[in-house]
Amino acid sequence: MKVLLIGGSGQLGREIRSRWVSDTIVAPAHAELDLADSDPAQWIEKSDAEIVVNCAAFHNVDVCESEPAQAFRTNALAVDRWANACAGADVPFVTISTDYVFDGESDQPYTEDDCDRPISVYGASKRAGESLVLRRESKAFVVRTCGVYGMYASQSKGTFIDRIITQARAGETIRVVSDVVASPTYAGHLAETLRALIATKRHGLYHACNTGPVSWYDFAAKALELAGIEHPIEPISGREWKAAARRPPYSALANARLEQLGITMPSWDEGIAAYLRDSASLRKTGSSSLR
Image: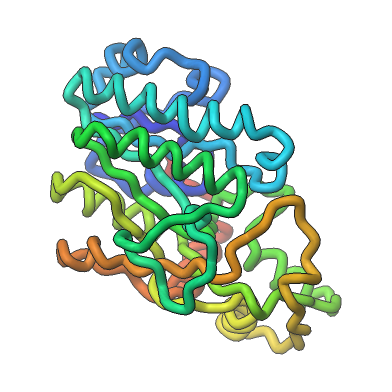
């Protein structure tokens, strides 16, 4: 396929560029192609795209609370314009959504059939984008995922796993929320799953996460274990984590519709292991294999 990739410099976008080796990836920089400001029809024609994949978003959850207009402009209205242009050109469209469309009141992983009820501006804007895309019943995939981390995270911040390991090696006190449960997902696994899903041509709404609910405390403990580091972690309550936006206390996802297609994703701990292995390989070779 010839793929027009929006958000190709992010964690997931860079994994797609690295792993979709049989495809031609056109991934303009953000300064050249902005999800909210660029002309979709013009870009589809210019790139001769056979599919458009959107990995971009206004995704700072806390900033969304103070800038709701920008959140909806990018995460809903812009996504709608791209979906409309793709439908008009008869080109499939893929856009990534979030576990934050749910309120977290469940105690079981959410399926695609569960009722959504976002409790933050970010979640509401992403849910609006989903609705605008899906209402057309076109060749579109809306894929919800959760807690994405990857080798190409911002070097200034690193991933959650990187920060935990760095703190442990420095002998620092580590405090991690123990009562917030999610489905953290390795971007490399997600990129491969997206490619398999696209190949089915079964358009619609899907969940795609590393499997199994896990608290962030247990996730951190497993990361240290797999990294071969012994260091205590202090569990804290989500109430102690001060943030502008509310987060769902339980947002694990079940990949029900993916599994109906025969597509399975590795477990959350297999995600950590793959991330540590791939990160070590990247550091050793110094090559990102990006196109």
